[in-house]
Amino acid sequence: MKLAYWMHAGPAHIGTLRVASSFRNVHAIMHAPLGDDYFNVMRSTSERERDFTPVTASVVDRHVLARGSQEKVINNISRKDEEQCPDLIVSTPTCTSSILQEDLQNFVDRASLSSKSDVILADVNYHRVNELQAADRTLEQIVRHYLDRARKQGTLDRSVTDTPSANIIGISTLGFHNQHDCRELKRSLRDLGIPVNQIIPEGGSLKDLKNLPRAWFNIVPYREVGLMTAIFLEKEYGMPYVSVTPMGVLDTAEFISQMEKLVNAWASVLSEEKVNYILYIKNQTKFVSQAAWFSKSIDCQNLSGKEVVIFGDATHAASITKILVREMGIRVRCSGTYCKHDTEWFNEQVQGLCDEIIITEDHTEVGDTIACIEPSAIFGTQMERHIGKRIDIPCGVISSPVHIQNFPSGHRPFLGYEGTNQIADLVYNSFNLGMEDHSPDVFGGHDTKEVSTKSLSTDRDLNWTPEAELELNKIPGFVRGRIKRNTEIFAKQNDITKITVDVMYAAKEKLSS
Figure (tube, rainbow, N blue to C red):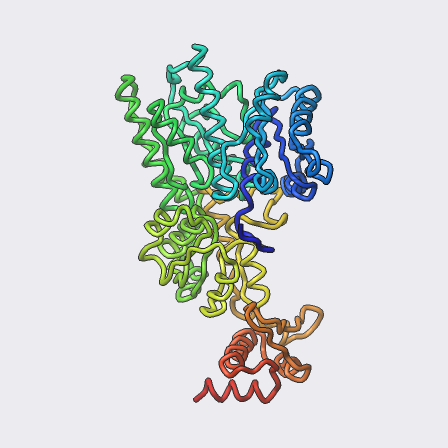
């Protein structure tokens, strides 16, 4: 198992807990040491939830290690069954339970005999999947469980709704701008006369899952969570799905066009009137989205020739790459994702749109790539934002993992036509333009910042002498970062560990020759 102090995607049990806690009246039991229950803190602080997170840690302590944990797990499940009366209790494996080789399935089977709630064990291999893969699998497992039960009991309603309707699959707690995106999707569907049948898992009811097949089609806005469920529903119940992410003007139009095709396909079968969404796309592009106008403005044209690096989950990194290249004319030097399980799809999406593709879970590799390219801006996760701070390159956050500041209280969707406005603002404000970068150095005042002389790479420590730092601070801010990086590169190439003023001048002479 790989241990790291920074990970782009968390361990598997975080994904299972995200899905379980998104549903209404579902409780999760995790068998792990006390420190592993940080999910509760993450959800309550980032999502600003007003209720208690429905997750209980069945704590592994010295007593458990000495006597075994079977009774403890079963007692915790039974206790939560009596106290909370949930519709479902999901037990999730963790690293600790896997190392201890706990037979959690046996514990779940025993507990279910005396519980009024349904009790299942999350069917995820902790050592082989990460947070996103586990969330995708857990959602599919829960949907499959309740649809299979409804089919056996004869309560499954296979008749489609009278009017076009859709399920939105994949909106979950701790998702990047998921709540804002969901509101924007509902607005678009309402404008098109397509009622939302169900939204899962966020706010979804297990008792209503049997009505999922009544929708005309499914919408999967993010590949990371929901795709397995949509594929299952298509295979078992013949439900088509739209997996185009409506991010950016072009892909939002494609998303609506695909919905139009599915609605008209059903209309032909049901002898209903066909729809045409072309006028809606034109009006939204012209009057709601400012991105189309902005791309032709002098402000956006000033970004022409700027170089950027993009990194994030597969959905957001691919979409932002397409927006910057196709809609804003910005050069993407490198586009990458930490979703190694989706490598083939990601390569297909960004091929030909960027100079380089990077697929990795190692944040140091991403950091070294950024330092080598020296782009004008970065679009990435919270990790890349920290990397940008260390080497004085601005970063716009476009994907999880994120800081609490990326869970805004206001309406900030990335999807749909309003999302195009938010993305345009994010892109434009992520560049240092004109006098913005070095005006504090010119005019002085409290905004003047001292340059960081910490090295980005972890393979060697470079020490700057106080005299060198003072000399570096005299350089205007708009070129200071580049000179600092060039000096450090020169020092590494010449096995120099202490950077003095003489080293700075030697580096300058080397680069000038």
